[in-house]
Structure formats: structure tokens, C-alpha cells
Image (cartoon, rainbow, N blue to C red; front, side):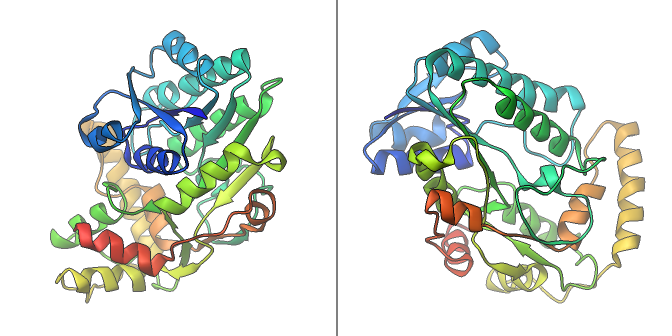
Length: 319
């Protein structure tokens, strides 16, 4: 298939494009900076330089593809609501419009954070209700994006919610944790027993390929993880030791961390810059968040190929 990948020059987008090429498909990478994508272009991927804020051009690009993977987004714990709305809601509306015009299948990348309440949850399924109050502006904007996809008439769409994507090329998850540890700012939050689900990036790419072709997936929403419940702070300490960074970290009680994050957010609003800690990032690091992926296994035939342990090894090689 000819598949347009929004955010195609980003971390996830490049891995999706690599998987498409290996599958015999022709990906078009939609982005603005193609320096990191040169190996993909040399392997047969196409480049489309386009700013996703140009809604008309984005819709036209989607209308010319056989299928679209909408992976482009503003994904951060901090930012102005207008920026999240522009990147995650208006852009999604343009993608939906283009796919409706052409009948292209859409695989839209969302996030389990849309159902995260900021409290512990275990084995959550896709039909868990949206919270009355979202944990972050990012979460709220991704929920509005899901509404656009689910409410579009005649759209052949699948929503994937990958949790905590990591792997070679990641600049957000493990690198930020390592950076904080090297600077002496990292502290375990809570009792250190919280379980989380992570997802190796190539497993997400596998799920995208399955969603592009599975007849049973149309109209469905699927959480994608590695299917392993990992004790987060044990894993972080293992990574730090492997990198020669002191891992004997002093913990901070979760209520104290949340209170500190509240004050830091207030200071961030006053000074106009991202605080070191937000209530959302505190909850992500201190709460249990595990998911049931049986629906993806059943409808997509999804099986995580690469374990968390192997994924961490591959990621550490890049460090």
C-alpha cells in the first residue's frame, strides 16, 4: 500500500516507516526535518515536507494516500492549551477530512493517558470511561482527537493507544530519566512498588501494520503494550547501574511529590517555562498503570515480539 505517515520523521514515525518498507509497502513521511530520515529515503520511502498546521494541505495529502497512519502529535507533559489543540485536535480533524474524501483507511495513534485518572489502575481495558478531569492538557487534546475519529461518518478507522513507547531513537522517556539522574535531580516517587506497562517501539510498528489490514479492527480502539507489568523503579535502577550512574536514590512520598509539583507548576506559569516536575509526570512515575491487551491480541492478532528486557538492551546500546 501507499501509506502516508504523519509525524514520519519522528521517533515512532521512523520505526513505522521502516516496518512498512520491510513489508513491501511504500511509506510517505510527512514532516519538516528529514535529517534523521535519510536512511529511510534511501531505502525507498518518500518525503513530503509539510507543516501539519496547514489544514488544507494536510487534508489533501491524506486524500491522495491509500492509507494513513496519523502519528504526528505534540506529546509532552507541559505546554499551552492552544498548542495542544492545534497539533492534536485541528490536525486530526484535517486528517479525518482527507481520509473521508478518499476512503483511505486511518490508523490514528492516541494514548492510554486519555483514560488515566491520576490514581492507581490495574489491567484497564479500552472501554474504561474518560475521566471527568483529565490528568494533563495533552490527555484532554488526545481525547478530543479520538472523538473526531469516532464521530466521523464513513471513515475506516482504527485507534491505537500505545503506552510509554521506548527504544533506539527515543528522546523523551529513558533519556530524560537518565538526564535527571546524571544531574542529581531524580528521586523515586512513592514506595517504589508501582507497576507500569511499557511498549517497545517495534512492537507498536507491528500493531500499526496489523491495524492497516485487519478487517475486524475497523471502528475499534486498542491499547498496545508489551503485555508485561514491570516494577518501574526496579527497571530505572537497573538502567542507571548499566550506565554507571549511582542508583541508590532516596525516595519521596507521593503526596509530598504532588505538592511540590503543584508549586513548581505555579512557578512555571509565572515564569513561562516548563517546571522540573508536573502533577502529571509525578503521577506517571508514582502510580500503578497496567492494561489488558486481550482485545488487540484477538482482533489484530497482535503479539509483542520484543520483550521489555530485550528492548532495554537494544536501547542501552545506543546510549
